[in-house]
View 1 (cartoon, rainbow, N blue to C red):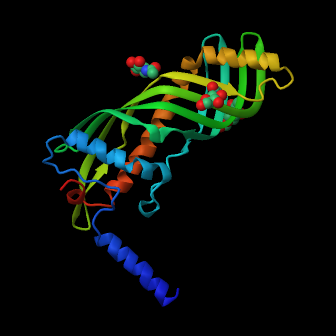
View 2 (view 1 turned 180 degrees about the vertical axis):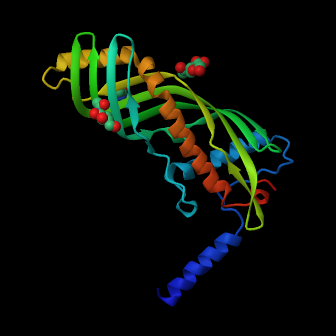
Length: 245
Ligand SMILES: *[C@@H]1O[C@H](CO)[C@@H](O)[C@H](O)[C@H]1NC(C)=O
Ligand SMILES: *[C@@H]1O[C@H](CO)[C@@H](O)[C@H](O)[C@H]1NC(C)=O
Ligand SMILES: *[C@@H]1O[C@H](CO)[C@@H](O)[C@H](O)[C@H]1NC(C)=O
């Protein structure tokens, strides 16, 4: 490494470590009269950065948000469906609206309700199903739109010591998904018989809530992990005093 580059990198690290907070992090005084609305403002200010990612904090972009594989192992009573959905990417998470926030700073506990007006997802499916007399096995693309989904979340942190300083570290977020409206399309279904393909998609869409209920735990777990990780990447980078002076 050239000495010039080394110096630049070194200075960069030093100035970052001792620098004030970056401009996209708006602090909320713990004595703030309306702490909830202050935190909501901070999160809103952070939104464009969350959307594109914050490389200097190692925070990946949330648009599109990659999700863990979903395995569906049953289905409604008159259908047997085994499916694996992989390579899932979700667009729209950054358009969340915080409907309600109840901060409890002494306990480092934040309860909030978030609504996402519209989500679009794409992935690949591998399905083996039997619906009434229809049997089908195949692979193809899956796409879908979720509208008006909301989430009840609880983020509970602990103040921890690191290098003689106090930081806030969150436990895994508790997240409950309230299902809104969903529309799902499996491409390539019954390739030789598009009419049955469309009919099957109609059956699936008449029963989306049943399918979504099956994938709900996976979705909740995966979203809780992603968002806890993002929150911790931010709070473990700045001391508690810096974030809540
Ligand atoms: C899904 O993945 C499992 C392995 O995890 C595999 O056994 C199965 O054949 C795959 N496909 C379907 C449709 O379940
Ligand atoms: C999702 O919405 C887009 C427009 O926002 C539309 O083009 C697409 O067909 C919809 N997909 C499904 C599966 O409903
Ligand atoms: C969204 O869902 C809530 C209930 O969770 C309902 O009160 C509201 O009317 C819905 N909004 C739309 C646009 O469907």
